[in-house]
Length: 204
Image 1 (cartoon, rainbow, N blue to C red):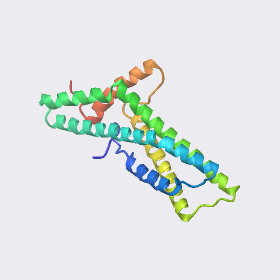
Image 2 (image 1 turned 30 degrees about the vertical axis):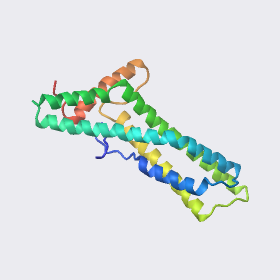
Image 3 (image 1 turned 135 degrees about the vertical axis):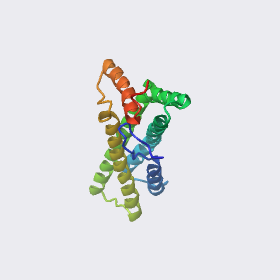
Image 4 (image 1 turned 180 degrees about the horizontal axis):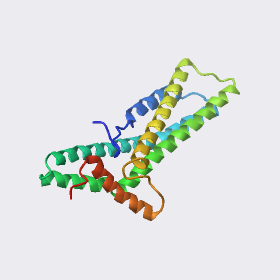
């Protein structure tokens, strides 16, 4: 089942391609041989960011999956509005999706994934720049591993940002402001926008 944003957009976040690109990169570059300082720095940065980036991507996948489930349950409610068991399940899902803990964890994961990608890309650029001023060269296998990793970093950044914009800035609930009052207002609008997205906003 594809994940969904509240705005109804199918999401593109997927942790599996990143895992593959990371493992391929490490199989090529992380070998017990003497390496240039810049490459050691790049490898260290990628290892540091990998654990948290993987967790963030998996959290985002789970969050969007929960919205997709909510929309499916909402469809069931529309089909049978007198089924109280299904309506109670929908209300429970709505409360979970609008809880402070879940919304804050979602924001943390989205921002964290973007930060990690930016950090990896910056270190990779520094390493590539260092090659032009040294006698070091990359084999075709190394070029392939680095290219695959950077392509995946670029793809993750694009997908996370697009999903985030669809969920937070252009959702029926409106843009996320700053401050406690803005946050409380956003949480309230999240309830409204979820109901609207599910077509059950008229139900009490």
